[in-house]
Length: 318
Image 1: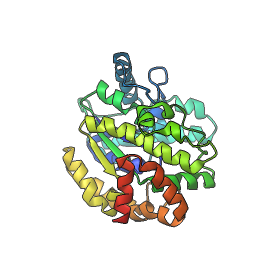
Image 2: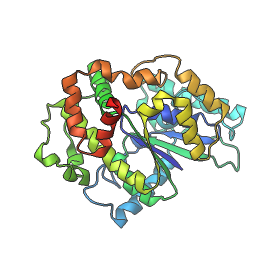
Image 3: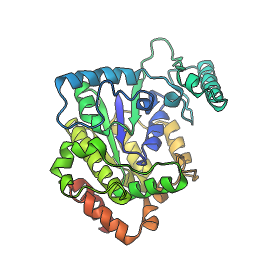
Image 4: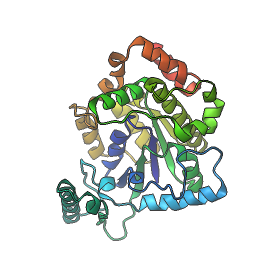
């Protein structure tokens, strides 16, 4: 199993669909949105996961791996798969389109309960890829529960993250940050001295900067320990073909033509706020036009409390 971790607005959906474009992979898009797993695990840990929590994480992984909700397997575009015949592919897409029609007709709850069949060929066992923007605080427990996972952590420049979140709020598609919650009690929060300078809930810039710092630092430690891949969205954006090819090859996935074609097409247009079709270089640099110097310096002051944050600014100014 490959597990893609990342914060919201960090390019994880684009990267996830690149994995989905591989004909031999089975991709699950944020299965933890329809199964939050709060009966098993907290979102953020105040301590190292206990043996009981690791076992709970193992159970939760099984639940995530078997989720086939429309939101999890019905994110377009769709790709040809080596483990599914043409007729099966047509049938499966028809079921997905039907559930989306139910949703548009107002039957959202009923549609969400539908499980989309895999319709994979008998005996096939494609490699599973899960992508989440909700599992950063659970990374340690999940990776301890299943050491065979190949974890990938995608991190965006903190200014890019803050800028995108603020833009989403201005567009009315993202809610304002309401505080750090349990994230403020994590070991990273204690180590980085949050208690001495905790931001006011009305200070959106500080809240977002601290959220970026603490959530990514928590996941980074777990992914490093599991010998996974820690990637910068901004570096990938400079030469997507080079970096994605290297990632695929390091995961023994090769470099299929279908993925090359999708990568090329995804860079040729600029969609809406949630679109995966956009010029990645332009998207990565947009914050430099949207944020003023004072805001950039505030973000730098907060995230530079850890080397993970300061290296983004070292790279920017070098």
